[in-house]
Image (cartoon, rainbow, N blue to C red; front, side):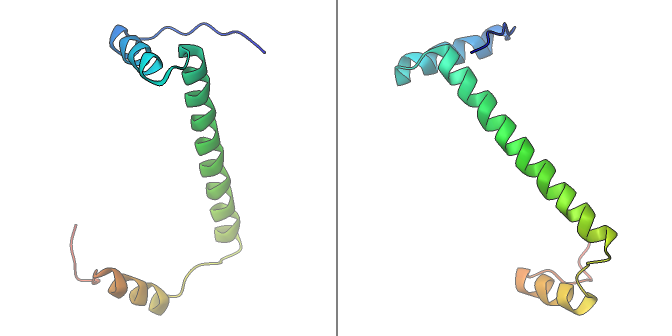
Length: 82
């Protein structure tokens, strides 16, 4: 297992300390879990983006009528403005 030093703003450090006390976990455990969750989420997002790029490169796009149907189901019309 490796050791890493992290500088935290005082408020975040206090929140981490409070959470550690409330859960009976160590600050190190909670920080490690937070980093693990972040890395998993970011890796998933990168994989999804890479898959979308691959599909786009192949020209695999939804047809206009398919998108219109999806928008209608969501209650959005092509005349709606942002």
